[in-house]
Image (tube, rainbow, N blue to C red; front, top):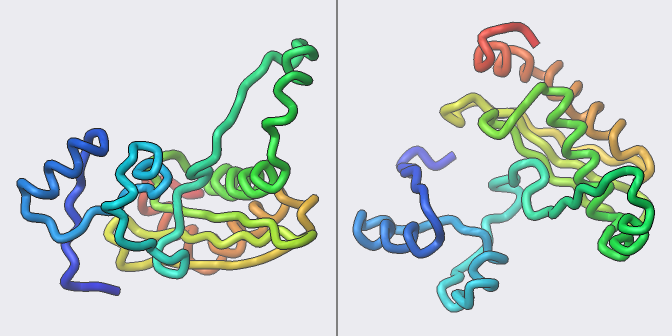
Length: 173
């Protein structure tokens, strides 16, 4: 969409990335606003990339707790941390990723959002260069989170995502 845009990969913590931005003469840097706020750097925040332009990675921003299944006391003690809308959104996002057999380096993205009693899932599959990408947006009753994620994945696979991912994985999906 922006052919004159040059994307430069940066590694490191926020301070390192900000220094690299200055030393490399970069015009912009995309960072999580929550991280900038937490570090007291909200003053450098200039704007938000709209969901229509860039979906986040699956589960982005969600925290997960793992507790032994048999540890009922601890599960009960931590139950107040469970945010049902977040859990439903991430359940749909993870079902989408699982159906695509994806991991952290696969160019797919998804964002779930609870709206009333419905769960809305926006997702995409892209080639590595970002020249070919497919998007879908569907909703379902919130209780059907995993099924929604799988349906969106199947829709994108049928629309050409299967070819993109087969080329990426080097095997059929």
